[in-house]
Image (cartoon, rainbow, N blue to C red; front, side, top):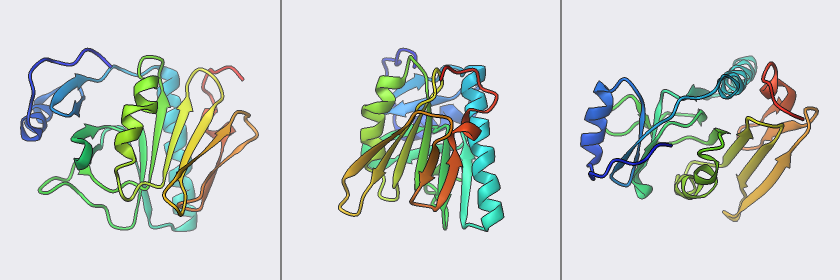
Length: 193
């Protein structure tokens, strides 16, 4: 992420600016942050993941949809608008009032980590995501090496951690009953094992 602009904006001002902007921005508690462009590896991983999810959803006729990084997510309690790399919504999609481009109820969020945003994605952003009542799993995918980290909300509302670090591993999304091989996520991406 780039440096935040100094002015404090309202959500309405942000959304109006974003409609006219040629680049995407995150809204973090009144500050607007420019989003940096992704690498070819970052993009390949996100595309692979989205393709795998959509294939499984269609094959099993699941009541879920996957969305890629152009659909905005709003977390009211955190006063945050962001663009997850991939997110899953199951059942009825809840949109922000009067909008069709801002989702409120993902069940799974996926983030392909970059060196510049990794700490933010693991800390402040994850803290904001935990405030989404519908969210059951948060998946972090490293773009430099084979590493998939899953944070899963258990029945007692605690978050449980699981790590996958081999291509033969299987990512099990328990909230939606979907399994994706780690090899499929990284297929064609240049990463170290």
